[in-house]
Length: 385
Image 1 (tube, rainbow, N blue to C red):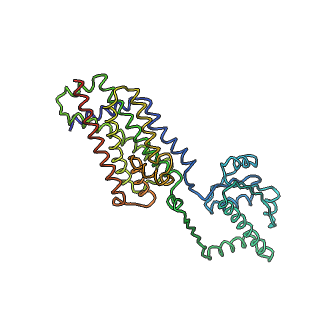
Image 2: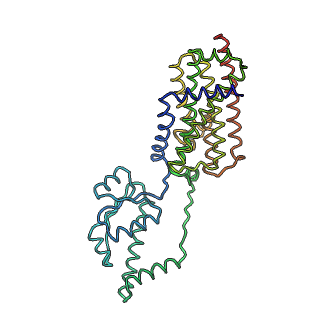
Image 3: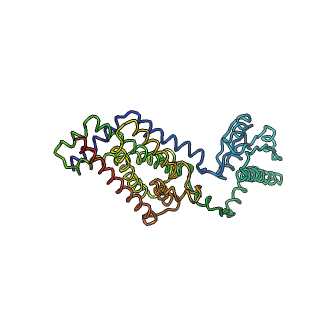
């Protein structure tokens, strides 16, 4: 066992010495999680609003009301706000003039300008509701003051009356199957899970190039010449690549949770999916390193095959949006089965029984690929000697 661990440790150190892995293993995956989350992820709030113009009591009241409606609120000057709306960086813009601020302070009707991007009726309606709520509150307070009530007492009475009335809760149920499937996902949840699968497989498959380097510089010959059994030698190679995959998967998982507050569901189940999927990637790396003799060709194959399998398996475009036939074809890839497992534990609070089929299929793929890769590696080493 000590010899197996020593070989695995050597493989891990060789992988870590490659400076290019600092970017492709640590930085690039998180950049893609961020970009894809912004582009395709569900919003963590009900929408985005930019307030522009004068800043006074009306601005503060509207900001609070919008925030209470779970809208993301930011401030910019009018020209910047219009640019943001035009480029889709914010969904609704509101311009508050100085005249509106003064009218609001005097308890009179205040008019604001609202600019909405196309295709955001829900956010637009939420902003309208917030504006109406602020206007109603000011009208109520002005009416009380007109009856001789002090302004501070009027504000307190209104606050007390609101607290005593039970809020009406509205639940919107989307009947569209796709919308229901992705309901409740955080903005970066989907992209983090898919990029985890893509890069665990890609990085591990690329590590198969080290097997070719080992043959070329004689490392394999020295290992076989050592007082080790073939099982120990191959076990070290398998364990080394599996550890590389787990380091990559664990890093993406922890960094996504820390940076983007990603919810992977039950943590130990997510780690179990990663572990079994990493075993599949390990077997594929062993097979690639045993069958290909040229390092450049192996690098090209690992990158191309990793990206193609990732795309087909739902890592670049959600499987649920694939046509039915393509969804069936996609399940020839381990990525699709791991995607389904993450979907269960992330979106449906699934347990071990709910992902049992996915884990069984991935385990079968791992056993087959590791067996094929080990056999091919043993035959290649025997020929070399």
